[in-house]
Length: 79
Image (cartoon, rainbow, N blue to C red; front, side):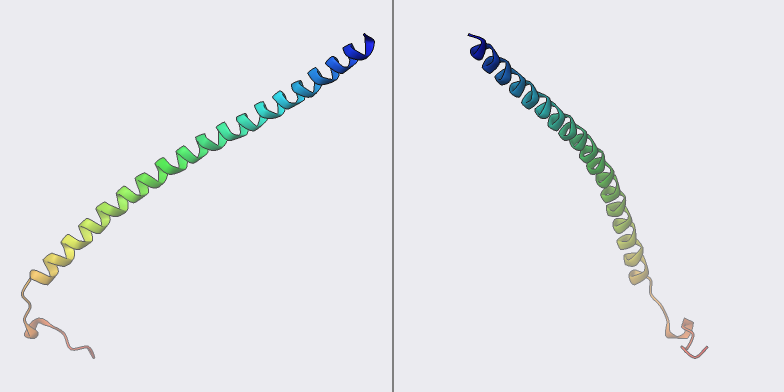
């Protein structure tokens, strides 16, 4: 009977160790998911700002390209 109690005790200790290990892994994964969510949100904001900047640059370049220029207005490259 004592052997059975020791066996049960050993099994319970092993299960407790495994549960603690799983809780630690879960905690680390939870922190990682939080950090990744913050990174994704930050990158989404950066992408949005870059898209606006590209739109503005396209608009500016279209204005420049549509503005008629005269060769008389241009300064020769050696000046």
